[in-house]
Length: 233
Length: 170
Image (cartoon, rainbow over all chains, first blue to last red):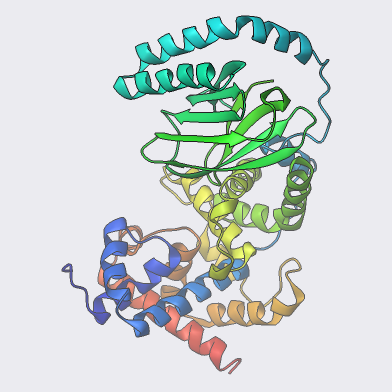
């Protein structure tokens, strides 16, 4: 087959295309033809419908063994309905954070400078400057990771007037658009926009109406890829 | 979010587990492996739920395609198919297995009957391709016939099934 498939070439492939077993190369060749050929597209659609029907017709329903449903539900990454109760130690942590704020900022700035290049030196400088000029109270940070523990980046939260949130992704598991959700200490979920990720990297920053102390964790969600979580508490 | 997700997951599993497990069992044979495959299929479906495009088909067929591919992966390196497609074809006498959606029963029965009426040289490669995920080349090697012949037979089978469904029972 050549790169320029004709109707006959593509119809020859239709069953394999419809059954989803065609190779990548075959699919590419067919796709190039299908985009300009409504007749072949219709043929493929009909063949795909037939494949769907055949799968339904050939596979009898069969009840799985007892306990299957609960085993599947236990394995799904769905948060347990049980409410997690933790003693609120936030006030003490916040007091400590206030005391440590200056040191933390310095450590973060140095850390950023050391870890990343010129871009992040600039970023760290901006944070220092922001704290200084806008009456910033503190800057906190948390690692952003998948449930497996695989690290993906960092979240920086700045308590000031206004407060800011900054997300830096350096090793995201997928490209695309991540929705950013803030889960508050009273378990509300607040949408906070999106972060675009290309080749594992992306950055996001915006002001937030919430006090940083009211944010329990930051979640980055993209369907089809692991959710990334940074726990601020 | 959490409560809604948990509820949606329970509904998904409860509603489709017999279909998913049934297909997994049809392909992999072993009940224990079928259970693993069915569980993995639900996990994948849940993970990729955002990629589900309602315009492209029903949830059932989307879920069954995931199940089929998971089942095929699970038995990919076995030399022999774990279940015998000929036996599967041998029972296609129009009996409805299980209790599918009432509105679909007639057309499924028609399809089973139409498949049962095809000569096995057409129905077997078709089932190998659709249910067991074999390519025309795989089937040619397995059956010891030229690839071109396999393609012709499968296309002929597709065409006859569509005609058979189009004109209902003859």
